[in-house]
Each structure stands twice: as C-alpha cells, then as structure tokens.
Image 1 (tube, rainbow, N blue to C red):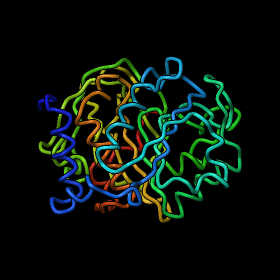
Image 2 (image 1 turned 180 degrees about the vertical axis):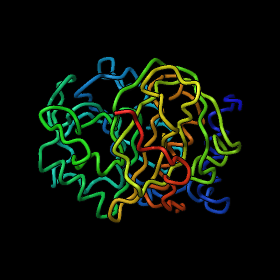
Image 3 (image 1 turned 90 degrees about the vertical axis):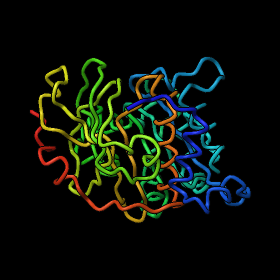
Image 4 (image 1 turned 90 degrees about the horizontal axis):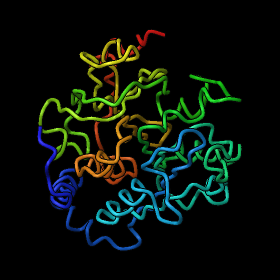
Length: 299
C-alpha cells in the first residue's frame, strides 16, 4: 500500500474515523477544559534512540511530532525525561501517559535524568489501574523487566502492565505486517484499509505476552532475516485493559521516517483517543486466534 498522504489530510481523515463525523468538528473546537493532558516520557536509561535524543534544549523528533499532532486533536502533550513527575503528589495532573523509554527507569542510566522512585512507579500503575490511559512505542518493552538489578521478566509489574517484553532485535528490514483489527481507532483511514502493508523499521522479538491481548497488527515472520525471527507470527501492536485503564503498544517507531509518516502519526493519535477514553473500541482478546504460535520464540 502507498505511504504517500498529506499529514493533515491523514490526521483529519483518521480523526473523523475515530471520533465519528459528527464529533470531529466539535473536537477541533474543544475548549481548554476538554483538552486531555498527556505526559510523553522519553527517558533513556538504556540505549538512547535518535528519535528521542535532544540537541540542547530542542525537543527530539518524536517529542515534536506527538506534541504537534496532539494539538490538532485536543491533546496537550508534554514531553519530559524527568521521572519525578510520577511522584504521587504530581501524577494526578495527567490524563494519559505515552512512553518511549529504555532500560531500568528506576536508575538515572544513560541520559542521567531523574529516575522514577519506587513510589513514583507504583503511582503510575495505580493511576492506570484507576482509569488513566497508557500508550507506548517501540523500545518501551525494553524498559524495567530483564534489566539489572531487577531481572524479573514476566514477574515485573511494568511488563505485566504493558503486555510484553523485549528479547532482541535483528537488522532493520522491510517486512509485511498483517492488520488483525482494521477498525481500531487510527487505522481506518491509514493502515487498516487493506489486509496488510509493508514497512521498513527495526523489529523487536517479544515474549511474556498475556492471553488477554487484543492484537491489532501482526508481525509476519516469513522471509524475515535473523534467527530471532525464526518463529511463528506474533503480536506487533496491541491493546488491553489494565484494571480500569487502557493500554496500547506498538513495536514500530525506531526509524525517523516512520515517525515522520502521517499513517504512523494517525495510529498514535487514534491510540491516544482510545486510551484517554474519548472513543471506545472492541478489545476482546484475540491473540490465540490471530497469532496461535505466539508463545514459541525459540528461547
């Protein structure tokens, strides 16, 4: 399928799809009171991806992209690498959270910015269980979990919340992605109008995915280069409930041209709309039906 589409046209079309034609105009003229406030957390305690690496005080590409796209759809996105914003006396400021992170976020790590305290991490889970939204991209599944000194894997509360854990990745390559749910917000006028699409990115091999995942996009492993992909198809993008909260993850987003693509931006805005409760979607678990071999990762 073609990736060529004007960003505003895509976002407007995608916005109309996920809000409904009658609600879209109202959303564009939404009052400040109805604006959803989103904390976009981009701390790199591990590998610093280029899309979230700042030059001086200038926001990184991913931060600028989500901030600007959010404005067009009634989201005030605040990008930060400061883990202190999750403290119990501060976390109530946010309606939703977006994560593009790596490493053990309870440590200053690579970028040296303030980490989450144990109270802040607990406050995050409590907030989401209580009904806040959470969306996450690419390296978020390489946060906490197996990183020392935690090494908790499937028992790590972050892994349990997000719905999967990073294992390893191979070389960047063009792959085929199957659309398991073309009706999820943000897909109807983007990726979802055909049964599959191709895209170049860095692809994560994942594990520790629970049975309650609603799979949106499927990683097609046939033809992929690298032993880590010699496995049955597995979830690449999903949504799930976490208590009263809504959780979304997509493996896409390593490359700068992916972040610059309006279809990817439309997917993220649709995910924010769903996670923040602006729109509903059917997230009935389908992982066993669409990716029956997902547990077989060769390890």
